[in-house]
Length: 178
Length: 333
Ligand code: SF4
Image 1 (spheres, each protein chain N blue to C red):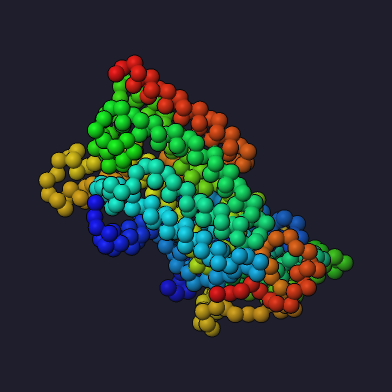
Image 2: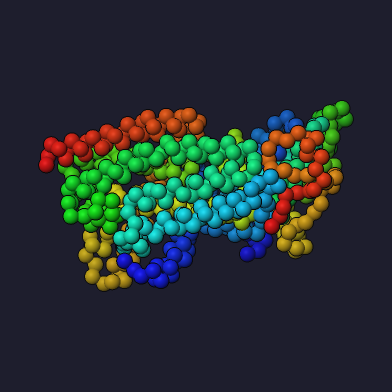
């Protein structure tokens, strides 16, 4: 067992924090026969608990920051976060909107930035390749790529629909890890 | 039948063999599925890589989960799947615990991994997992009926034609292949029952088009929504072993021929090898028809449709098959 297994089996969870859906379509396009990311063992999963990579799109609209932080907390270590699209990197067309909390790296630590509005699937796949390298570094630091979330201690509960208030009322961070 | 001590030693062997072949068939299924969609698909050994990776991940138990049940469920699912393998004839030879279990036991054991998943889903304290667990239970109720009809018809046919044997014994099925016991009418009936069993298979395994319990696009992985790391890997393995076992059951009931006997190979090792290869080919055929093909060809049904398909169409077809066999038994005998 080594980081090599991570390379060949990245499970990807996609978080939309208020994007225009352009980037999301490009992510889905990378599953199609033309790009077929399953060749590299990648697959899209439906829950952050199964994920190794978080693909975050969108400029983080107000209200999404807590959700994004919680999804980040729910993802088991080691993990990498990728910001897909210019929105999540700089705000892009939504720049200086009253409704933005982002960009993404103000909310969760981002490992790989993929530029474009929207980026082409090739760029996204290239970004994932860079994410491998990141995971390898984390593997060298220790088996678990331990990192604290940058903004506060968002308490994590299971993926229900607890209100943001309830989530922040908890002081204990994270689920019990075994 | 072997002694209890020997039986104990056999369990890990069966477990490892089941896991290896289960994962291999899973890889084959993914590659073939990708090819059917004009994709290249993952490498054949992808499921092994996935499991190795999952074992390295953090294992999270949610705060509001019932921890002991949450952790016990994946172990129970894997154990039940492996226990299943002990009672099914594998690799062209008899079942490992031949004589101590019959088809009824196998049908009940098939339920256990699903029940463990339901328990794990309810224990994870997540809304998505709860919805998934409820759907899994409804699906279980629906596919059991056509499955039971198919198994009972096979046993009935066996008991009426080959009087000397135990009706539900899987060993007797391989001694008297069902197809050789019937005329035209019964043949059609058996074909219908085989089709019904192939149709029950994706439901039993929670695969598309009957994967409502795990529907990752609507309920975030359903019963498995909160599972990560080692626990998820155990469920993954349980699923692989159960798929292999389910295909082996269909092979045992409907395609029990043995290459060793058919080719009358006298050498022991060559005979065993031919038997094992022929068995794997049969399992592959069943897997392809009942799992890969259906998964790729059909889109996910809603839970109401799943119930309608199984209780309605599949049960009606199974009853028709039963009636055809009955008609032959009454008319021809
Ligand atoms: S980066 Fe462009 S395409 Fe992507 S979500 Fe933002 S506006 Fe849409």
